[in-house]
Amino acid sequence: MTVDQGPVPTVSTLKELAANGIEELIGVTSVLRSELDVHEATCRTLLDEVRVDHEITGVLPEIHADTWRSAMTDAIRGFEAARHRVRLLLVAIEVEEGRSIGEVAKSWGVSRQLASRWVQESVGLGG
Image 1 (cartoon, rainbow, N blue to C red):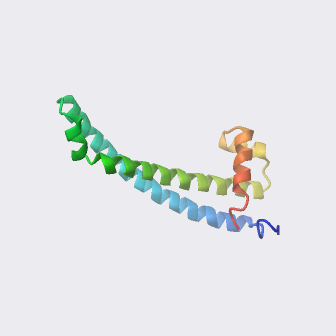
Image 2: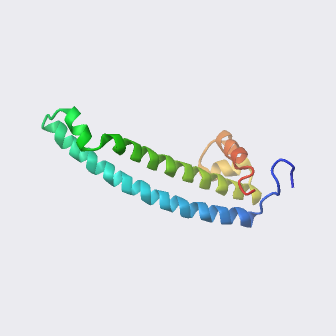
Image 3: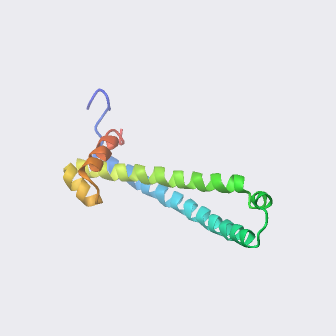
């Protein structure tokens, strides 16, 4: 146990957190997919309007551009946050299982520098 971080999480605790994170990731992936479908349909509508040379100022309110953009941005951010958390949990498990930063880098296909950053970010995730 360290004073700063509390008890060191066990691999099984990290795996439980990772499993929960993966379930969350699946959920936000579904949300993102749905938003992408809406986005594609809206883009097709917008394309049709642009091709017939309608004034954009009249088209944007029709496609609800104000909510269209923010919904897509929120879905992407939610997906990226969940994906990053799962990645860090999986990296933490690798480290707890005794893998070196070089081995972590190789397993993810990233540089040692990036793997090292992920390892540092993953410290304390299980606490």
